[in-house]
Length: 71
Image (cartoon, rainbow, N blue to C red):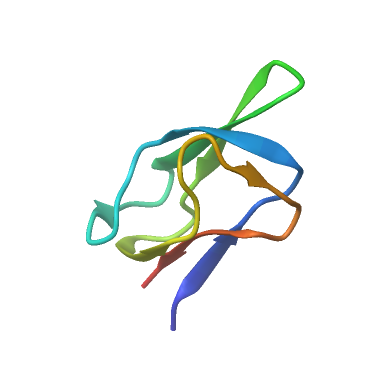
Protein backbone atom coordinates (compact mmCIF):
# COMPACT_ATOMS: atom_id res chain seq x y z
CA UNK A 1 0.00 0.00 0.00
CA UNK A 2 1.26 3.47 -0.89
CA UNK A 3 2.17 5.97 1.82
CA UNK A 4 0.85 9.46 1.04
CA UNK A 5 2.90 12.44 2.17
CA UNK A 6 0.68 15.51 2.58
CA UNK A 7 1.28 19.16 3.37
CA UNK A 8 0.75 20.08 7.00
CA UNK A 9 0.36 23.81 6.31
CA UNK A 10 -0.10 26.42 3.61
CA UNK A 11 3.34 27.06 2.12
CA UNK A 12 5.36 27.61 -1.04
CA UNK A 13 7.26 24.68 -2.51
CA UNK A 14 10.79 26.08 -2.41
CA UNK A 15 12.80 23.04 -3.57
CA UNK A 16 11.90 19.56 -4.83
CA UNK A 17 14.67 17.07 -4.02
CA UNK A 18 13.22 13.81 -5.40
CA UNK A 19 11.45 12.66 -8.56
CA UNK A 20 9.15 9.80 -9.53
CA UNK A 21 11.12 6.55 -9.57
CA UNK A 22 13.65 7.66 -6.93
CA UNK A 23 14.29 5.34 -3.99
CA UNK A 24 14.03 6.98 -0.57
CA UNK A 25 14.61 5.83 2.98
CA UNK A 26 12.95 6.85 6.23
CA UNK A 27 14.33 10.29 7.12
CA UNK A 28 15.17 11.48 3.60
CA UNK A 29 14.05 15.02 2.72
CA UNK A 30 11.56 15.01 -0.15
CA UNK A 31 10.85 18.71 -0.57
CA UNK A 32 11.53 21.93 1.27
CA UNK A 33 8.58 24.21 1.90
CA UNK A 34 8.85 27.91 2.71
CA UNK A 35 6.40 29.71 4.95
CA UNK A 36 6.88 33.03 6.74
CA UNK A 37 10.58 33.04 5.71
CA UNK A 38 11.14 29.66 7.40
CA UNK A 39 12.32 26.58 5.50
CA UNK A 40 10.37 23.46 6.45
CA UNK A 41 11.72 20.10 5.23
CA UNK A 42 9.16 17.41 4.37
CA UNK A 43 10.60 14.05 5.40
CA UNK A 44 9.87 10.52 4.18
CA UNK A 45 8.54 8.37 7.01
CA UNK A 46 8.94 5.04 5.18
CA UNK A 47 11.43 3.33 2.87
CA UNK A 48 10.29 2.90 -0.72
CA UNK A 49 10.06 4.32 -4.22
CA UNK A 50 8.45 7.62 -5.18
CA UNK A 51 5.46 6.57 -7.30
CA UNK A 52 3.91 10.05 -7.68
CA UNK A 53 4.91 13.65 -7.08
CA UNK A 54 2.08 16.07 -6.43
CA UNK A 55 4.07 19.31 -6.35
CA UNK A 56 6.47 21.41 -8.41
CA UNK A 57 8.86 24.14 -7.35
CA UNK A 58 7.13 27.50 -6.93
CA UNK A 59 3.72 25.96 -6.32
CA UNK A 60 1.63 27.00 -3.31
CA UNK A 61 0.28 24.04 -1.34
CA UNK A 62 -2.67 24.04 1.00
CA UNK A 63 -2.94 21.97 4.15
CA UNK A 64 -3.70 18.38 3.14
CA UNK A 65 -2.43 18.65 -0.46
CA UNK A 66 -0.55 15.61 -1.76
CA UNK A 67 3.20 16.15 -1.88
CA UNK A 68 4.36 12.66 -2.79
CA UNK A 69 3.35 9.01 -2.76
CA UNK A 70 5.81 6.32 -1.65
CA UNK A 71 5.33 2.59 -2.15
